[in-house]
Image 1 (cartoon, rainbow, N blue to C red):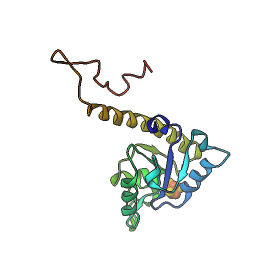
Image 2 (cartoon, protein in one colour):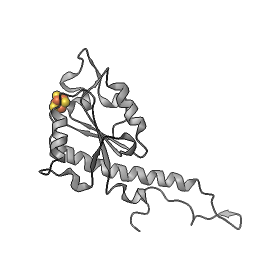
Image 3 (spheres, rainbow, N blue to C red):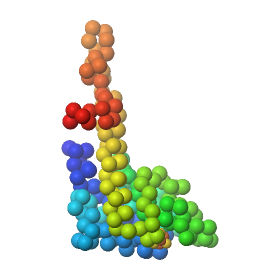
Length: 175
Ligand code: SF4
């Protein structure tokens, strides 16, 4: 049941890994009634254990990197990471500064990159919508792995192919 509704009501976790706050303000703007990111069922939560989408802004600083990895590992699978702004994607204008370590994907896997300095609410919404599709695909992959755990049905000494799980996307036309 959770799998069915996860795409309709994903919860996001927002973390500033060292940004100048420009991208964070744009994320808040995208949640405001003008841009209304919440129309996709998104709820901004502060709890990693209840989050599906991780929005990260800014380059990773020495002080923030441990917390970044900790938050990521606390999120349940499946989860999607969205790097918001040039700094989180590449280090941006802060790259090679004494207090900046590196871009976000050096520490955690990133699924969606949202460009811009600062990134705009439209681009952030676009990134979250892409993240929803990736979340759905990851959910299906996990379901497929769970089905593989079931014992195959054997008819006349031959494994029944009717009961075999199909590959991700194979059932899409039927459903
Ligand atoms: S991309 Fe630009 S606005 Fe966003 S954190 Fe970096 S410097 Fe600030």
